[in-house]
Image: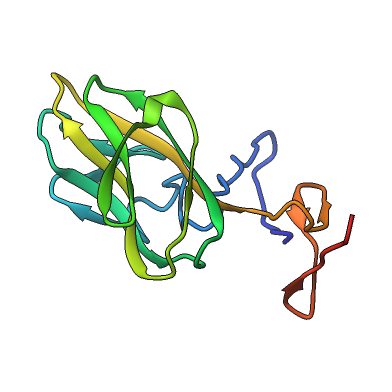
Length: 158
């Protein structure tokens, strides 16, 4: 998708982060598209939290395809709180600082995002929330994107 706009001479546009299935994964539009419990606020292209509380949730309600494989990732820019991925409504026990995590969709409406498991001592800043479906091994890819025809994934028999 191409986007056009006018810039003042000598300025550049900051690219919008691709959150995959997550809307507004780079928080360029504040917390739009995100649900939160209880103390999240929009930062400068980030989601900010006091970081000292537990049971803090930041998530989107999604229905992921049954038995399809997904990859979730996020960046903890600041803070010493322990933040885990929240997958299918529950704390996964997987710390977001360990990198991307794969899981399987269950075909049910679920909350997916992050969960503050253990509070820290200073502000928590999160960015780059991303959720993508991992293509099956026989799905045709071009430039990192799944090739589709009439809305269906193109596959091959290798």
